[in-house]
Length: 339
Image 1 (cartoon, rainbow, N blue to C red):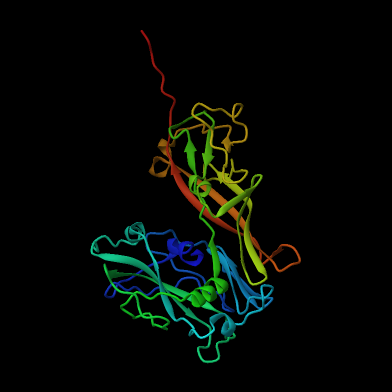
Image 2: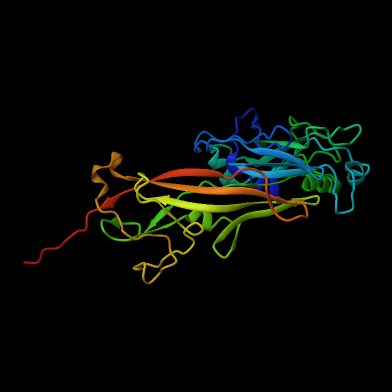
């Protein structure tokens, strides 16, 4: 389910009988964002932008983007009441989490438990079954339940404190998936190719994480996240520029197509692999005199969030830049003296 998997990297959790309490993405007029676990780098400065387009609440910012819609306009025009039929408005529900999710959040001593993301919905009046003025918002907690825990009786609703496994009816899931779509904006970060960097030798940079991110698609060297859609509105994030500053001083910074999309093979050179992201001049000095004996390689990825309500893609707000620094050690060229 899109809304769970795309957000788990930015969630924190604290446990009370295995139940955490951390808000994640919430889309509405306030343009709220997300929280990260303590081990994650802080989000870049700068807020997000939100607006209402064709009965949908749109949010975009450095952490990600998303939208929620009160009705399925353009797809039959069903209201919340029509989608749910006799079923009640869901409060909370559980989506399976992986063992790796638990490790990422520091939960390593719960071998007799199954892990879940407990999602909760707000912004729909349970009596009138209409979307409130603030829009539909979601929160999530990481939790665990003893193996063999039974499902809650359908159709609910159940609060976030329920100790059974909360599941959705087909109609409730249709409502949830209609109303909530989101995607994250990854932080940039490069590795050097070859990994052992020496002075006066060209070095290529590759963003391995971005290249394996299944949410990113490509149009030539143009990187795009999405589109995602709810109702008659679609959203996407488009990479504008990707700039690498190999020394962290700004003097040798250069733009790179995509994320250094081309991975040069071992032994490659700028001549044999010209489409790779090369620092062609190479480092002129080793990193021995640098703080921590490493160059602070800076990467700036500039994105713009766009939406399309039938009139072509338009910017939701101003472009924003996400920045990351990666230490890189550079050694002197070794010479061998033969007597």
